[in-house]
Length: 439
Image (cartoon, rainbow, N blue to C red; front, side, top):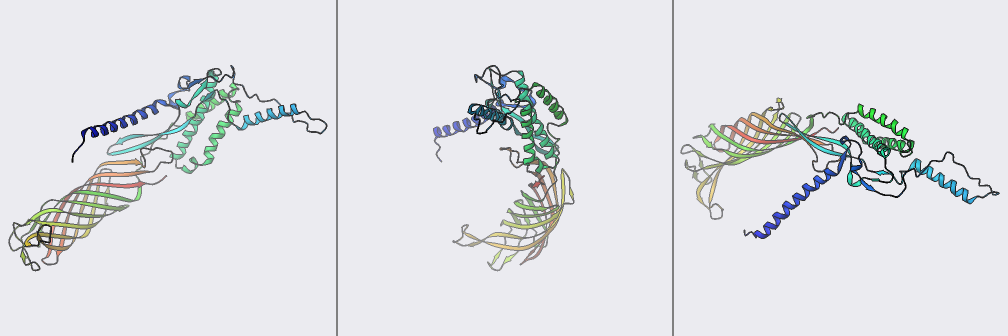
């Protein structure tokens, strides 16, 4: 294949440039994020703006009394009615709506990050939440902002953090439905709304002090994140994949001892609790027969030769039970059934065939029994997603990567030459996966 090196260079440049853009984008996102645990609100983390509202932000004074206009036909004061209705509207808006022109504007939210840890051969991913806001979305009015403005908004930041901790505590204790319910979300909104109203959107400094003390005491009683409990109690149903090499040697039952050399096999498995079912297919191994007159194929009128190499293929289903299942070791006795085919290329030429010569085949049904020993190299607890982390993404899976050793004896009943007995040894890489019980 001809390669256009200038074109390849352009593609490589674009590839590495794209990777650099992604990395720089992630760094910019991190530098733009201000977390609650990094300290109090600072004006340096916000964008200064000038709203030209004067030196105070007491824009919506609450009237001491609300007078009801006299709508009698004898007296109509349109101006007074409009004034009272206007004050009443401002008062209702103060009680029910957000401040229309805040001194400081920032948008607290909850984010999630993954922390990778390792204990022995177990690797797990802990998902940790945090309260944050983005500098690029935060601003303050330079004409009206003072220390009390910061303290007023810091209390709101504390309320977000307190309810985040409460939610994590509920999730950790198994009360997932309550933590995700509209009722719990409304509790947080009600707490924020109550504080804003009671403090007159930051005008009453005594109320701000009270709330500072209240939420400081509450945060002292709540852990930033519950202690992560490593759970490997998985679902009953699991799947596995294996691939490896094997060696099988016939010891009795066939003339001249049919000897095979190493081959390759792959397998798929299913497990239910401690019961394991594995379907395996192997082949591509090459062997020989050790003496003359091993077998005469009457169909092809062909005598197998000592110098003729043989190939074989195996298909088997093994059923086992885990008698020992520890963090590092699994022992599984098993029994199985399957079939085996052994073939040798003959000197019978056939122009229709791709290889040019026909093959003489021996087929047999086999039974086997033995032991499977698994050494667990790595165990993993993985979340269902590691790229897009969200609140709802709490499902994880349990995985095992292990070196698997199989030792067993087999009896193969060949239709033409009778039973043959062999010993088998195989070494494989095996990957198992289960879903963790959903909380």
